[in-house]
Length: 122
Image (cartoon, rainbow, N blue to C red; front, side, top):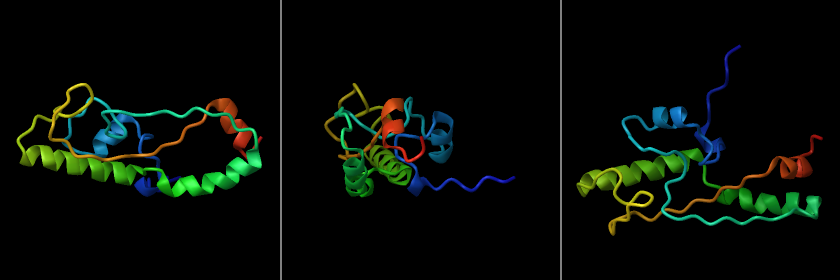
């Protein structure tokens, strides 16, 4: 049985595994995968009103960064670094460089308990 092709527009930007990520972004040598970031924030919460949460979640879904957007962001960053003769790790992680491209991304993740709580399948 053949698997359906992976739609990067239907996968969250921080989800792809390293080998898939590097395969998609051929010739890049990043040591990490997922959304490019120098900083990130986390919001932890508990879902008390499951139906209300599910309803509100529909407002968040369009804001979630897809793997397709992430691929495009990384390509834009790579082109910028090549054009400006920057090393590939300039502006990544701990190596701060003043000439960086600003991108932002949104992801959502659930604990096992949280996923079971908001899932329709029990």
